[in-house]
Image (cartoon, rainbow, N blue to C red; front, side, top):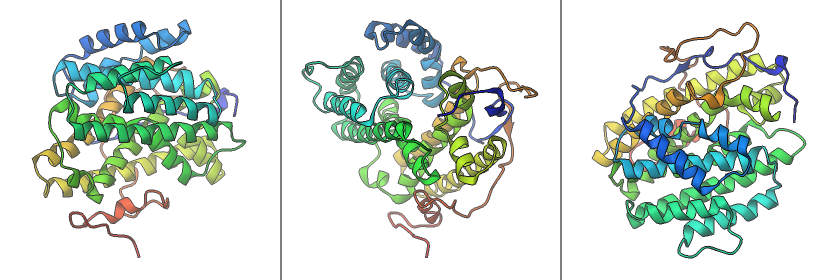
Length: 369
């Protein structure tokens, strides 16, 4: 891992605008959500380090939840905000800065999965995070159907397996390939259980066959990926300065393309915008054909992408000293045109199948020849 220094930092948001033509929205209970969540977080004692607790308290979990899910009643929204708090605490205190071995994290995530699979009785030696997730899982039963609970538990398996892979990458001598990194990060960022919560919070239920439609699966993975890449663009300088952490899209690209961080950043933005364009085109296709619940779901995916950007652009978590000469821009500075609007797939086998779904019929996967 590298040691952060000024020459490693690159101009990033707000000096690099995003392309995201999804209208902003926010639930009016953002402040109440945050107050309830921070109070709960302290009572759960998720982090014993006081500095880390203070950093987490500034993350604005209520603002994140209100911007990504500007719908639903206060109780399930508060559950989502609490879930965000656990994810952030796990990310900072257990996964990133603690630098656990893959074996150690595999044990912890196995205990977490058992807590959400069978939450009735605590296991001996249960960690704070496992205990918090077990409590959230029990509370989730008030709002979710058995089918929705199954989906959320399955999504937690995607997330926890990604955490173990991430831990092995952090211990490895070099950076992963770009193709591996894209797969890893869409899983490890925790978006799978977060998008599984959308219909629970909003109070609708998408049929299984709709969610299994390859076009909808692609839209769901695109959402995970956009949020993970956007997070990288916002958080890279913070991670370099605080932890010397270069497991980031910009640095993986810099390593793979053998170029400097400025050129890698430009390429990352192009990749990100091409995927955003694909999302908009594929979403429009599904919206023209899907039922009411499916249309609501794919609309909510777009809101999650936009809401995450709105929250991250003002969150103190990502505030770091700007590189010399970096311009500052007001909140809400957005590009009106993508850096890359090509309909050609990115040369990444793990995600190139997304582009095959443009023009595909319901339930049919089209693969490139």
